[in-house]
Length: 99
Image: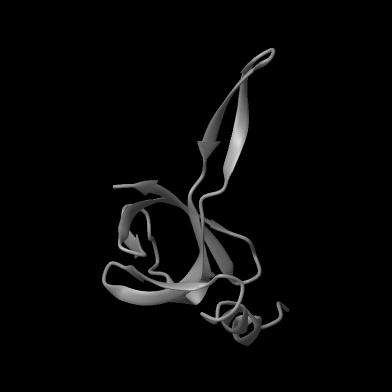
């Protein structure tokens, strides 16, 4: 039987912890952690380019049944949810694309 991690997940997403922020998903406020870390992608032997994979980590229970295509606004920037990636602990990483 899976453990209920809801309270722990909510505590982790408190706005004064871990860089969490409040965003809106289709007009509904949700808490989560936004990340758009840059990384290098190798495109040939010694050639690389920089890229990023913007994402928003939030609780499963704060999401609609299928968040794909919905608009997430974080710090005034609009993103489209490309795909949800649940991690099995009650949290989902939303892969984002800037609108």
